[in-house]
Picture 1 (spheres, each protein chain N blue to C red):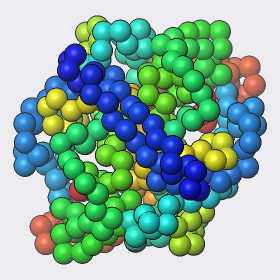
Picture 2 (picture 1 turned 90 degrees about the horizontal axis):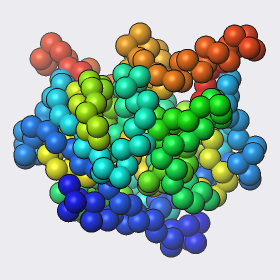
Picture 3 (picture 1 turned 180 degrees about the vertical axis):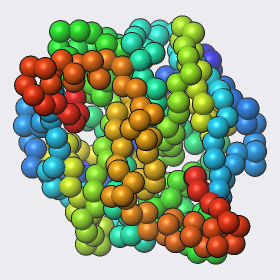
Length: 166
Length: 166
Protein backbone atom coordinates (compact mmCIF):
# COMPACT_ATOMS: atom_id res chain seq x y z
CA UNK A 1 0.00 0.00 0.00
CA UNK A 2 2.63 2.50 1.05
CA UNK A 3 4.79 1.85 -2.00
CA UNK A 4 1.81 2.52 -4.31
CA UNK A 5 1.18 5.84 -2.63
CA UNK A 6 4.77 6.89 -3.21
CA UNK A 7 4.79 6.56 -6.99
CA UNK A 8 3.31 9.50 -8.86
CA UNK A 9 2.13 9.83 -12.45
CA UNK A 10 2.54 12.91 -14.59
CA UNK A 11 -0.23 13.71 -17.06
CA UNK A 12 0.07 16.03 -20.05
CA UNK A 13 -3.09 17.57 -21.53
CA UNK A 14 -4.15 16.24 -24.92
CA UNK A 15 -6.17 19.34 -25.68
CA UNK A 16 -8.43 22.04 -24.35
CA UNK A 17 -12.16 22.76 -23.96
CA UNK A 18 -13.72 25.77 -25.68
CA UNK A 19 -17.09 26.63 -24.22
CA UNK A 20 -19.40 29.37 -22.97
CA UNK A 21 -18.42 29.32 -19.28
CA UNK A 22 -15.81 31.80 -18.06
CA UNK A 23 -16.62 31.52 -14.35
CA UNK A 24 -17.71 28.63 -12.15
CA UNK A 25 -20.81 30.60 -11.11
CA UNK A 26 -22.13 30.33 -14.70
CA UNK A 27 -22.19 26.51 -14.71
CA UNK A 28 -25.59 25.02 -13.79
CA UNK A 29 -25.43 23.00 -10.56
CA UNK A 30 -27.64 21.85 -7.71
CA UNK A 31 -31.19 20.44 -7.93
CA UNK A 32 -32.48 20.17 -11.47
CA UNK A 33 -29.23 21.26 -13.11
CA UNK A 34 -28.89 20.10 -16.71
CA UNK A 35 -26.01 20.57 -19.11
CA UNK A 36 -26.93 21.28 -22.70
CA UNK A 37 -24.22 23.81 -23.52
CA UNK A 38 -22.34 23.30 -26.75
CA UNK A 39 -18.60 23.62 -27.03
CA UNK A 40 -15.51 22.29 -28.74
CA UNK A 41 -12.85 19.83 -27.63
CA UNK A 42 -9.69 20.92 -29.45
CA UNK A 43 -6.99 18.29 -29.52
CA UNK A 44 -3.30 18.90 -30.01
CA UNK A 45 -2.61 18.62 -33.76
CA UNK A 46 -0.09 15.80 -33.23
CA UNK A 47 -2.86 13.67 -31.67
CA UNK A 48 -5.43 14.10 -34.46
CA UNK A 49 -4.74 10.58 -35.87
CA UNK A 50 -6.09 9.18 -32.59
CA UNK A 51 -9.56 10.47 -33.53
CA UNK A 52 -9.89 8.16 -36.55
CA UNK A 53 -13.41 6.66 -36.75
CA UNK A 54 -14.74 8.75 -33.86
CA UNK A 55 -17.58 10.16 -35.98
CA UNK A 56 -19.45 6.86 -35.52
CA UNK A 57 -19.85 7.36 -31.77
CA UNK A 58 -22.75 9.39 -30.38
CA UNK A 59 -21.31 9.92 -26.88
CA UNK A 60 -17.83 10.33 -25.46
CA UNK A 61 -16.34 10.23 -21.97
CA UNK A 62 -14.08 13.22 -21.39
CA UNK A 63 -11.55 13.16 -18.56
CA UNK A 64 -10.29 16.62 -17.66
CA UNK A 65 -8.54 18.58 -14.94
CA UNK A 66 -10.09 20.90 -12.35
CA UNK A 67 -7.19 23.23 -13.11
CA UNK A 68 -8.70 26.23 -11.32
CA UNK A 69 -9.45 24.48 -8.03
CA UNK A 70 -6.90 24.01 -5.28
CA UNK A 71 -6.88 21.77 -2.26
CA UNK A 72 -8.77 18.71 -1.09
CA UNK A 73 -11.72 18.41 1.29
CA UNK A 74 -12.52 14.84 2.31
CA UNK A 75 -15.94 15.95 3.57
CA UNK A 76 -17.89 18.30 1.37
CA UNK A 77 -21.31 19.98 1.19
CA UNK A 78 -22.51 19.53 -2.40
CA UNK A 79 -24.75 22.10 -4.14
CA UNK A 80 -27.52 19.49 -4.26
CA UNK A 81 -27.45 18.97 -0.48
CA UNK A 82 -25.72 21.95 1.14
CA UNK A 83 -27.03 21.16 4.60
CA UNK A 84 -25.18 17.86 4.89
CA UNK A 85 -21.59 16.72 4.58
CA UNK A 86 -20.74 13.77 2.38
CA UNK A 87 -17.51 11.94 1.61
CA UNK A 88 -15.74 13.46 -1.36
CA UNK A 89 -15.77 10.12 -3.22
CA UNK A 90 -19.60 10.21 -3.22
CA UNK A 91 -19.59 13.63 -4.92
CA UNK A 92 -18.21 15.41 -7.97
CA UNK A 93 -16.53 18.06 -5.84
CA UNK A 94 -13.46 19.60 -7.50
CA UNK A 95 -11.63 19.51 -4.16
CA UNK A 96 -10.51 15.88 -4.36
CA UNK A 97 -7.15 14.12 -3.90
CA UNK A 98 -6.53 14.09 -7.65
CA UNK A 99 -8.34 16.92 -9.46
CA UNK A 100 -9.67 14.75 -12.29
CA UNK A 101 -13.20 15.26 -13.60
CA UNK A 102 -15.39 13.24 -15.93
CA UNK A 103 -18.09 14.48 -18.29
CA UNK A 104 -20.15 12.52 -20.82
CA UNK A 105 -20.80 14.62 -23.90
CA UNK A 106 -22.75 14.09 -27.11
CA UNK A 107 -20.63 14.27 -30.24
CA UNK A 108 -22.19 16.64 -32.79
CA UNK A 109 -19.46 16.76 -35.40
CA UNK A 110 -15.76 16.90 -36.15
CA UNK A 111 -13.50 19.34 -37.92
CA UNK A 112 -9.98 17.90 -37.97
CA UNK A 113 -8.68 17.96 -34.40
CA UNK A 114 -11.81 19.74 -33.13
CA UNK A 115 -14.88 17.90 -31.83
CA UNK A 116 -18.13 19.82 -31.54
CA UNK A 117 -20.00 18.49 -28.53
CA UNK A 118 -23.12 19.10 -26.41
CA UNK A 119 -23.12 18.80 -22.63
CA UNK A 120 -20.11 20.93 -21.75
CA UNK A 121 -19.89 21.65 -18.01
CA UNK A 122 -16.25 22.72 -17.88
CA UNK A 123 -14.78 26.20 -17.86
CA UNK A 124 -13.46 27.59 -21.12
CA UNK A 125 -9.80 26.68 -21.42
CA UNK A 126 -10.02 23.52 -19.31
CA UNK A 127 -7.25 20.99 -20.05
CA UNK A 128 -8.37 17.58 -21.34
CA UNK A 129 -6.50 14.42 -20.28
CA UNK A 130 -8.33 11.73 -22.25
CA UNK A 131 -11.30 10.94 -24.47
CA UNK A 132 -12.91 7.50 -24.43
CA UNK A 133 -15.85 5.97 -26.29
CA UNK A 134 -19.07 5.65 -24.27
CA UNK A 135 -20.08 2.03 -24.77
CA UNK A 136 -22.61 1.04 -22.15
CA UNK A 137 -24.18 2.12 -18.90
CA UNK A 138 -25.82 0.67 -15.82
CA UNK A 139 -29.55 0.08 -16.20
CA UNK A 140 -31.48 2.70 -14.17
CA UNK A 141 -33.42 -0.02 -12.32
CA UNK A 142 -30.15 -1.45 -10.99
CA UNK A 143 -28.87 1.87 -9.72
CA UNK A 144 -28.88 3.12 -6.13
CA UNK A 145 -27.51 6.62 -5.65
CA UNK A 146 -27.39 7.01 -1.86
CA UNK A 147 -27.72 10.57 -0.58
CA UNK A 148 -28.24 11.87 -4.12
CA UNK A 149 -31.56 10.02 -4.42
CA UNK A 150 -32.59 11.35 -1.00
CA UNK A 151 -31.63 14.94 -1.79
CA UNK A 152 -33.34 14.87 -5.17
CA UNK A 153 -36.51 13.49 -3.58
CA UNK A 154 -36.46 16.34 -1.05
CA UNK A 155 -35.83 18.90 -3.82
CA UNK A 156 -38.74 17.46 -5.83
CA UNK A 157 -40.91 17.88 -2.77
CA UNK A 158 -39.95 21.55 -2.65
CA UNK A 159 -39.96 22.49 -6.32
CA UNK A 160 -41.89 19.83 -8.18
CA UNK A 161 -38.87 18.67 -10.15
CA UNK A 162 -35.24 17.82 -9.78
CA UNK A 163 -32.87 15.78 -11.82
CA UNK A 164 -29.49 16.09 -13.41
CA UNK A 165 -26.14 16.75 -11.88
CA UNK A 166 -25.04 18.12 -8.54
CA UNK B 1 -3.42 25.56 -27.26
CA UNK B 2 0.35 25.29 -27.02
CA UNK B 3 0.38 26.78 -23.50
CA UNK B 4 -2.10 24.15 -22.32
CA UNK B 5 0.03 21.36 -23.65
CA UNK B 6 3.02 22.66 -21.73
CA UNK B 7 1.50 22.45 -18.25
CA UNK B 8 1.56 19.02 -16.67
CA UNK B 9 -0.36 17.58 -13.73
CA UNK B 10 1.04 15.15 -11.20
CA UNK B 11 -1.31 12.53 -9.80
CA UNK B 12 -0.74 10.52 -6.63
CA UNK B 13 -2.59 7.21 -6.19
CA UNK B 14 -5.36 7.20 -3.59
CA UNK B 15 -5.19 3.43 -3.21
CA UNK B 16 -4.68 0.11 -4.88
CA UNK B 17 -6.75 -2.67 -6.49
CA UNK B 18 -6.66 -6.19 -5.06
CA UNK B 19 -8.03 -8.73 -7.51
CA UNK B 20 -7.56 -12.10 -9.14
CA UNK B 21 -5.59 -11.02 -12.20
CA UNK B 22 -1.80 -11.22 -12.11
CA UNK B 23 -1.22 -11.04 -15.86
CA UNK B 24 -2.98 -9.16 -18.66
CA UNK B 25 -3.63 -12.46 -20.47
CA UNK B 26 -6.00 -13.50 -17.64
CA UNK B 27 -8.35 -10.53 -18.12
CA UNK B 28 -11.35 -11.30 -20.39
CA UNK B 29 -11.33 -9.22 -23.55
CA UNK B 30 -12.58 -9.27 -27.12
CA UNK B 31 -16.02 -10.37 -28.35
CA UNK B 32 -18.36 -11.41 -25.55
CA UNK B 33 -15.97 -10.48 -22.75
CA UNK B 34 -17.72 -9.82 -19.45
CA UNK B 35 -16.23 -8.74 -16.16
CA UNK B 36 -17.74 -10.31 -13.06
CA UNK B 37 -14.56 -10.75 -11.03
CA UNK B 38 -14.67 -9.61 -7.43
CA UNK B 39 -11.91 -7.63 -5.80
CA UNK B 40 -11.13 -4.93 -3.30
CA UNK B 41 -10.33 -1.26 -3.70
CA UNK B 42 -8.07 -0.43 -0.77
CA UNK B 43 -7.77 3.28 -0.06
CA UNK B 44 -4.94 4.98 1.78
CA UNK B 45 -5.95 5.14 5.46
CA UNK B 46 -5.69 8.94 5.51
CA UNK B 47 -8.37 9.14 2.81
CA UNK B 48 -10.94 6.89 4.52
CA UNK B 49 -13.07 9.89 5.65
CA UNK B 50 -13.74 10.59 1.96
CA UNK B 51 -15.75 7.36 1.76
CA UNK B 52 -18.45 8.59 4.16
CA UNK B 53 -21.94 7.60 2.89
CA UNK B 54 -20.59 5.51 0.02
CA UNK B 55 -22.52 2.42 1.15
CA UNK B 56 -25.69 3.94 -0.34
CA UNK B 57 -24.33 3.76 -3.89
CA UNK B 58 -24.68 0.61 -5.97
CA UNK B 59 -22.10 1.49 -8.64
CA UNK B 60 -18.87 3.46 -8.67
CA UNK B 61 -16.64 4.87 -11.38
CA UNK B 62 -13.01 3.98 -10.75
CA UNK B 63 -10.24 5.93 -12.48
CA UNK B 64 -6.93 4.08 -12.43
CA UNK B 65 -3.53 3.94 -14.09
CA UNK B 66 -2.29 1.52 -16.74
CA UNK B 67 0.91 1.32 -14.73
CA UNK B 68 2.30 -1.72 -16.55
CA UNK B 69 1.86 -0.39 -20.08
CA UNK B 70 4.34 1.90 -21.77
CA UNK B 71 4.07 4.04 -24.84
CA UNK B 72 1.30 5.43 -26.99
CA UNK B 73 -0.14 4.18 -30.28
CA UNK B 74 -2.52 6.62 -31.97
CA UNK B 75 -3.83 3.84 -34.19
CA UNK B 76 -4.58 0.53 -32.56
CA UNK B 77 -6.06 -2.88 -33.39
CA UNK B 78 -8.46 -3.71 -30.52
CA UNK B 79 -9.09 -7.30 -29.37
CA UNK B 80 -12.71 -6.95 -30.56
CA UNK B 81 -11.63 -6.03 -34.11
CA UNK B 82 -8.01 -7.12 -34.62
CA UNK B 83 -8.22 -6.87 -38.41
CA UNK B 84 -8.79 -3.12 -38.44
CA UNK B 85 -7.04 -0.10 -37.03
CA UNK B 86 -9.00 2.49 -35.05
CA UNK B 87 -8.08 5.78 -33.44
CA UNK B 88 -6.95 5.29 -29.86
CA UNK B 89 -9.66 7.65 -28.57
CA UNK B 90 -12.33 5.27 -29.91
CA UNK B 91 -10.84 2.38 -27.90
CA UNK B 92 -9.86 1.44 -24.37
CA UNK B 93 -6.31 0.65 -25.41
CA UNK B 94 -3.76 1.09 -22.59
CA UNK B 95 -1.34 2.68 -25.06
CA UNK B 96 -2.82 6.18 -24.93
CA UNK B 97 -1.34 9.65 -24.39
CA UNK B 98 -2.24 9.60 -20.69
CA UNK B 99 -2.44 6.04 -19.30
CA UNK B 100 -5.72 6.59 -17.43
CA UNK B 101 -8.38 3.88 -17.40
CA UNK B 102 -12.00 3.86 -16.28
CA UNK B 103 -14.00 0.95 -14.88
CA UNK B 104 -17.55 0.92 -13.53
CA UNK B 105 -17.83 -1.52 -10.63
CA UNK B 106 -20.68 -2.68 -8.42
CA UNK B 107 -20.17 -1.93 -4.73
CA UNK B 108 -20.74 -5.04 -2.62
CA UNK B 109 -19.64 -3.81 0.79
CA UNK B 110 -17.19 -1.77 2.79
CA UNK B 111 -14.73 -2.55 5.56
CA UNK B 112 -13.12 0.72 6.67
CA UNK B 113 -10.89 1.91 3.81
CA UNK B 114 -11.59 -1.24 1.75
CA UNK B 115 -14.43 -1.48 -0.78
CA UNK B 116 -15.47 -4.94 -1.96
CA UNK B 117 -16.55 -4.65 -5.58
CA UNK B 118 -17.64 -6.72 -8.56
CA UNK B 119 -16.49 -6.02 -12.10
CA UNK B 120 -12.75 -5.78 -11.58
CA UNK B 121 -10.83 -5.74 -14.87
CA UNK B 122 -7.55 -4.35 -13.56
CA UNK B 123 -4.38 -6.20 -12.63
CA UNK B 124 -3.77 -6.90 -8.97
CA UNK B 125 -1.81 -4.00 -7.51
CA UNK B 126 -3.13 -1.38 -9.93
CA UNK B 127 -2.96 2.19 -8.59
CA UNK B 128 -6.28 4.02 -8.22
CA UNK B 129 -6.50 7.76 -8.95
CA UNK B 130 -10.12 8.52 -8.10
CA UNK B 131 -13.51 7.07 -7.20
CA UNK B 132 -16.73 8.81 -8.24
CA UNK B 133 -20.39 7.98 -7.76
CA UNK B 134 -22.16 6.53 -10.78
CA UNK B 135 -25.25 8.70 -11.16
CA UNK B 136 -26.74 8.28 -14.60
CA UNK B 137 -26.05 6.91 -18.04
CA UNK B 138 -26.99 7.44 -21.64
CA UNK B 139 -30.16 5.58 -22.68
CA UNK B 140 -29.22 2.62 -24.93
CA UNK B 141 -31.60 3.79 -27.67
CA UNK B 142 -29.65 7.07 -27.93
CA UNK B 143 -26.28 5.39 -28.22
CA UNK B 144 -24.27 4.84 -31.40
CA UNK B 145 -20.99 2.98 -30.92
CA UNK B 146 -19.31 3.22 -34.33
CA UNK B 147 -16.94 0.40 -35.20
CA UNK B 148 -17.79 -1.40 -31.92
CA UNK B 149 -21.37 -2.00 -33.04
CA UNK B 150 -20.11 -3.24 -36.41
CA UNK B 151 -17.51 -5.56 -34.89
CA UNK B 152 -19.97 -6.98 -32.37
CA UNK B 153 -22.49 -7.63 -35.11
CA UNK B 154 -19.83 -9.52 -37.09
CA UNK B 155 -18.81 -11.47 -33.96
CA UNK B 156 -22.46 -12.36 -33.30
CA UNK B 157 -22.68 -13.64 -36.84
CA UNK B 158 -19.71 -15.91 -36.16
CA UNK B 159 -20.44 -17.11 -32.62
CA UNK B 160 -24.08 -16.40 -31.91
CA UNK B 161 -23.30 -13.91 -29.18
CA UNK B 162 -21.13 -10.94 -28.39
CA UNK B 163 -21.40 -8.20 -25.90
CA UNK B 164 -19.34 -6.59 -23.21
CA UNK B 165 -16.01 -4.90 -23.37
CA UNK B 166 -13.20 -4.93 -25.87
